[in-house]
Image 1 (cartoon, one colour):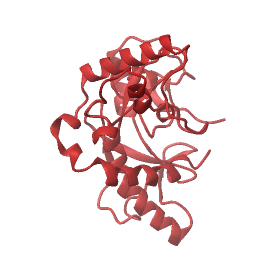
Image 2 (tube, helix red, strand yellow):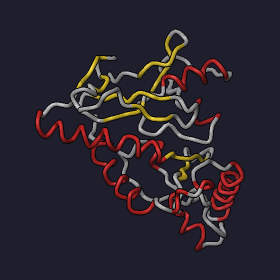
Image 3 (cartoon, one colour):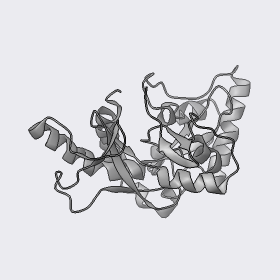
Amino acid sequence: MKYTYLFALPFIFLLLSGCMYPQSERAENQVPNEEQLAVVQQAVETYREEEGGLVPIQTKGNDTPIFEKYLIDFKQMQEKGYLTEIPGNAFEEGGVYQYVIVDPENDLLVRLIDLQATEQLRSVNIRLDVYRQEHTYPAFGEKISDQIYTVDYEKLGLKEAPTVTSPYSQADLPIVMDLEGNLYIDYSYDLNQALEEYDHDYREGDDIRYLLVDHAPFVPVYSLPYTIKDGQAVFMEES
């Protein structure tokens, strides 16, 4: 496994603290807007058709998690006339969402990253960094699998287990940790709801996170791969 989030999160937090407020406090910047999403979707599709198959994305490293890898380059779209204005709820305009393309080579699905999830992880990540400086090892809690643990919130000086508000269900989702101390959001609750609600043909070994992507405007950021076993969502173990 790689130290993906441990280094990426502080950079995003810096951007959030420096750019997102106070403009983002406007109510229209804090909710997903289906009309804006549809406008961007159409603009991205037109861009690919007229630009020889190219898509307007920012360059990211190959080790960037798949749901955060293809951020839309709004500046490029504006300069070439494919968008007259950037959506008000986009991060670039002080909003709390980043617009991403899930599959740039095929479906070109445009979805949202909820940056409020990043903000909720911030304090936990900071406490975890401080703990590791003093104790070397992460604050492992209970073992969920061979590779995944809960966070021992008491070791971090917290009164209760940290959670993140789900953009899908508004439920309080747990935060989990891998063997290297990287933090992730546990979307098991949302995935199990989706498995019950929507028809699907997922089998054990498939990454079922795309079930959420197909039926909601958000991507499950800071997530580990999940598969299905006995009808339930489970973490997909690395061999």
